[in-house]
Image (cartoon, rainbow over all chains, first blue to last red; front, side, top):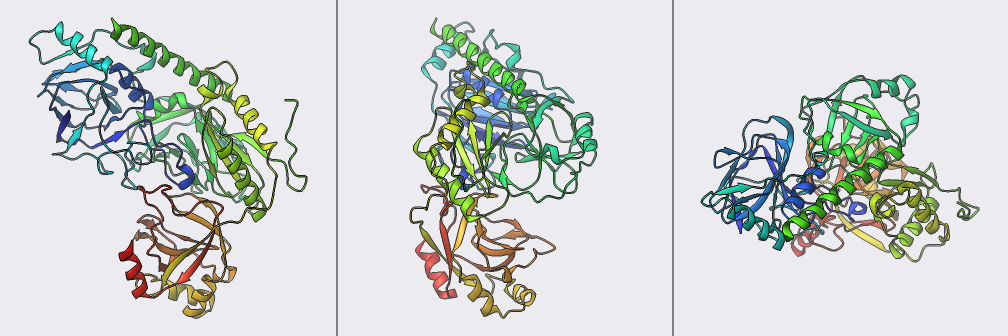
Length: 335
Length: 246
């Protein structure tokens, strides 16, 4: 069970639910930037939500499947095709050996995910298969995929195998077939060009001047090209503190908006360092990490202030909706 | 909440505040001190011994311990408020800690360092800035027992306390594009060891053959918060030998 990378795309890495438990050793969590998209993809192919798949950035790879697979492509619309025909997003798709998955120009968003039933068979490093490029660990040899790589797959889960058979038995003679069912659209929001991302106050919010606080919630920010899986550097109005109180390094996390002295904020993402010494102005809510992940370099975003209770409401709402999808799919694949 | 933790009256009360919707910060003090550090270590040990459902992990720092929780698990699938549930679980544990209790004997880790030469290209700069000779810089740097306050910035990178103030030297004005792993440096009043090859602006005074981060090892980081550390000067021959042994 494997697939061959004919062309690697701009930045294609193996990611799973992330590396938890080693932040006290300075090891970052990593994992997908749009975790919701990979989790939905995994459920569609009968995997645990944290299984390893591919994170595909802006310009996608070309991949040949060397055996039959059940897969799903979720997240950004990067003009995915199978054997040259348009591939529907957010669907379970049964492919046969020799099928080629390719991508074209980005249409909406910038990070797509390929989930494969059974997950990928790369080694666990510190309990995770996620690629952390800076330390060169996880994934395939700790690096982004290259042309000529063979990515080993574990082989479909029992549920994935049943769905694969169901789909292809209805489409005799075809090389691939997509399911007609799809998840609750709440779980697969179409990436918007200039999203509003909800955030709560960060621990040092009160150290910023009232003008800077207001500007942060009002202004449009641009994601600069100096952005990567570690974080987005944003351009917008300069944000200032009313104090020069020293900040002692403390934990930072996915979604932390920190502001260096020059005044331009940085939003940290999955490969964020474990601790930082810049003031933390705000914290993007977990339910909106996907929206954040889909803003391309040069794209824009706004921040909207919400309470911690609202953040938790939307967190729990997302988990419940995922649970409904999981239960629905269990019924489907047991038929 | 009818039961608030009674910590040792000698220590200020622990402040709790959120870091987003999945983490809770325990702030023990506003300034760095060994007493605060020991208090944080004592609480961290309690988390190790009595992890509560929904505890994901924790990150100790100079004056804080940040606790990551899973809002779904800790709220019992949304039946309770996640933040209040996390606060209650943490306060329950804080109530059990013997604040500033004398630490069980802490481990002393020796880090061999080859000072100067191509391994420590900024030893001369530090000597010049501090008005010492290079040998005096080495003697002073190898004297104290340092405290590993926290690991952060990069995998295995230690923030150390205890450098003699006389050695304080500002960072380089232009960072180097690539600092080799194992480089020992000084930045302001801090000293540390680069755990991975990265760009960096610290004044490099030497290099250790020990690996500070080994992803295949358990634990992956040679150092952890709470340990004590001493630098030991070695020759270039010893450096080469020790590197081959690793």
